[in-house]
Amino acid sequence: MPQTTLDYLSPAQTPPTTGDRDIRPLTFRAVLFALPILAIVLVVNYSLVGLAADDKSWSALKIMIMTGPIANAAICPVSFALTPLVLRYSGGSLVPHVLASLSPVAAIFVDGLFILSMGLHGC
Image (cartoon, rainbow, N blue to C red; front, top):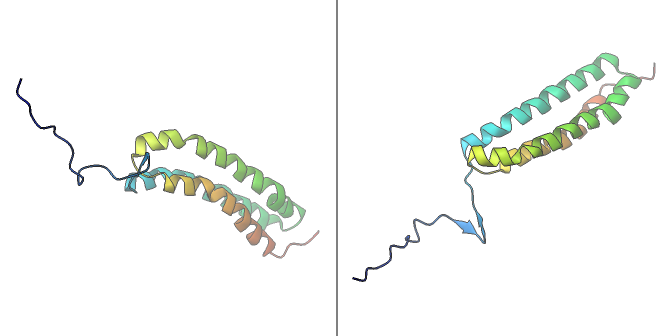
């Protein structure tokens, strides 16, 4: 049997890695998978701030302290549960998805700032 040289990948053809994990590129498709989560967060928080702006009394404070954080806390686990699907179908980096999944945490504080700046009254 004749001996032949093995056909190895050249260093330029090997995918970049850090340790045991592959580096996934940031793709437009990965960003598209994050947009529905951001849209849901924006719609929910826009409606909460709109309801608080109509009332400007104890109900607005209830939205800021209780309803808003509960609504945003319900979005986080649902979006993180979709992470394996996003990883499989986007083929890109998970960074946009993780940032979009954590955006409800920031939305809680932004809602609070908006509601407190409305000039609430106790009547």
